[in-house]
Image (spheres, rainbow, N blue to C red):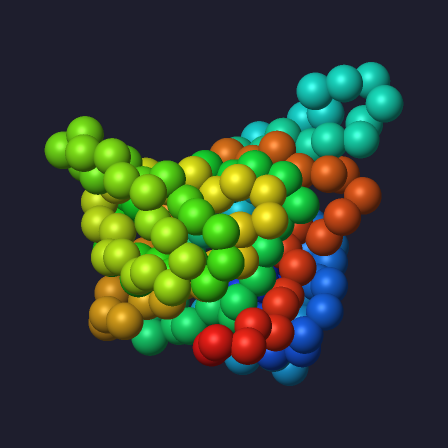
Length: 160
């Protein structure tokens, strides 16, 4: 297993692209100290290695606010511990609550995701998350991303 600090919306101050890989660490960014990204499994679904499929465990520290960002592909996640406050800035996300209820979270909307809730982030959705509690959040996530892009790309939204 590889651990690395995350420089993403759960980690972003500089507005631009953020490259996150298993070798990268930064002690100067406060966001990198509040989110860890542990790759549990990964692989390339095709021989050309243009996409990467990953299973990741994110741990978000108490009171951490992630930067606004997007991803270069599709990502799904499930809350395993804690409460994630998730906001859609542009686009929409599909949420499935632990009780099976499904809803579409649209632009400008915020939701609290708790244990058992899941989320689908499609390419291009601009969003951010935060931990407004005193306990860590753990999220299991699967993603299918463009292998030649950063895992998260920071944005500078007008309405944030």
